[in-house]
Length: 146
Length: 146
Length: 146
Length: 146
Image (cartoon, rainbow over the protein chains, first blue to last red):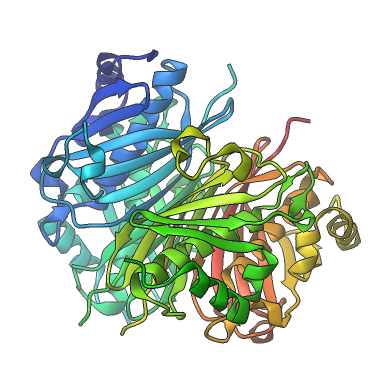
């Protein structure tokens, strides 16, 4: 069972993570397998080519793994990213982006998350396999000693 | 000799890259060895722990390599990031971040850039070796066919 | 339908990739979703801690994506790795390692593959979801112009 | 001052890391700034295209950071790689490869190393800046609690 709710994440982001608000981040759901996070589109996401700027997708991937971590260990705000690797795969549509983050490893010191990012209108959260991701990332978080 | 000026980058960012403005990005200088890009601090960069949110540093690293690419090939806006890897090394101070981007490879199809990020108050652009980086990234850009 | 057979890969490795033989690589199967590659254990894989040396897993991941690429484009030997990122997740058992490589993107110029690596005795190739991976990698190959 | 000598590393590799011997690894030198590691060429390194197989370079990069770690913390064999990212930049010559590993961060729990790889005949260890690297890697090691 998750140790935070989407509302908890919303409150944390509202109060402590202004950049999450700028990116329009919304934690959609937490389930046994992982989390879904959305970046709600705005025109400020655009880059030349009519597509979404890379930093929006990197920020979404990073935040999705942050939420995944907090869902398992509780609201330990000082969990921090130690590394992130992202491959940009396809041109996203100018619209919402959805990220599915799942754990590759949950250690005591390090958590490694896998994130697939999709153009929201191309994908159903209940059938992610049916769409091609626009980007794929892995991110490692370091958990502070208890 | 650079094929763009800092002013050209400023104009591009103003008109076509709203996210660069949100991140307070300023191309500081272009020289034979690479470029310096600054993210001008604002409180919206903060994350829990009194430090800078990771997406700001990822966006800065990405943009610094974008500027490096444009400095060599001219204003080819459709050069796009294909991958980015970042290691977060030390807690940045709540202040400006400076990125030094240098080329690892300039191919016809792919450019690989190396980026070291510093807390601006800890470093002199003329002596980057004297400070420890807060993060280090590599990013690959794909160059569209001419 | 695959453009190479496991036997084709075996012949290529035997004749042109001596390192693949040193790593005991065997292409197990090619299906619509990806490929399975095995590194057949030998004591020379060991590192301190009674576990498998990282280079064996990196080489296996790289070769699995190479086989994935060749399965789609045919025996284009000059497809080359442009980047590889690997996370080591759990201590592998001293035994065979199995890699499952699937495509994240098949472009004309770049192919990005996702690879999950498992201790062979912990996993069934027909139910990979049932085991935890010992490592996870992504690798990008550049395809030479036709 | 280094906590191991090149001879210590040679002994460790001879006794406990057979794969290092297969790759012809020799720790060349340890200095205040980092280490130099060599992979002594043999024909088994070749891959199609008359160049060096990627796993040789990945193994060399990984081992160079391992030696860097041991040079600072002593012969703690159970330091393990948690992640490695490599960009292949240029076609190496069929000959020895030299790796220069330097620290990006030396933390109590995590060490991040930067590695530039060169074709040995193109480079002088006293003037690495004068040659273009054939590959560039970063690797993170986890240090076991004392």
